[in-house]
Image (cartoon, rainbow, N blue to C red):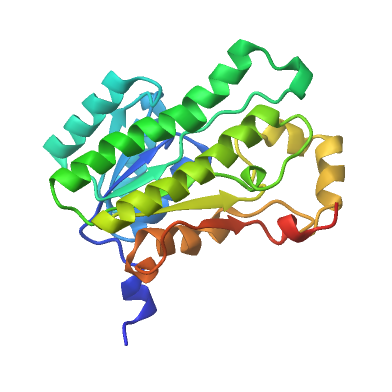
Length: 258
């Protein structure tokens, strides 16, 4: 019988985390680095990445920061090439880069729709496609975790484009798992409930946001550390028989009454 801690180890893995400059992406990078992975921090804002990279190295972890725009195929290719040259091929991908432009359905214009879809869905597909092809070429038993949301499983007012992008990402996850699972690559989606991030901080700090929290089942925001074990389970040998799931971590929000 294996020790649970050894099953969650990420030793020997090169983990690429997109959208790692802030919020949950930065937290995921720290979790993976602490578990032993060599972490590649990727985002458009490399200044913040460099700060996080320095903190991880100061703590004795292995990390590198690279600039990557998930909406730009050339930028993704360059990032993968830089990663392989410095650390070796990616064995774990955390597809975390995401944006939101909250609008009611009738107020969504083409620019707003494309802004959300280009990063949350098309960007995730582009990165996963390029990374998984390299995994197959190099015969790597990879793990891909797409960061979705409970809004991909349940809608809310003013979140039409965001919820649609995350619902599509969940279906993409399942399609990828079906096809890539036969080739040794596991693909799952992590669906956080409400955790404070740059995207939602203004709302949840407002009186309206506080009133909303009082009415949902957990009656509070999630704490980042409550995602640690679910993330590591999906990335590590602990989840070796898990493929194609969308895992909510939401304090029971989804089972609350409408």
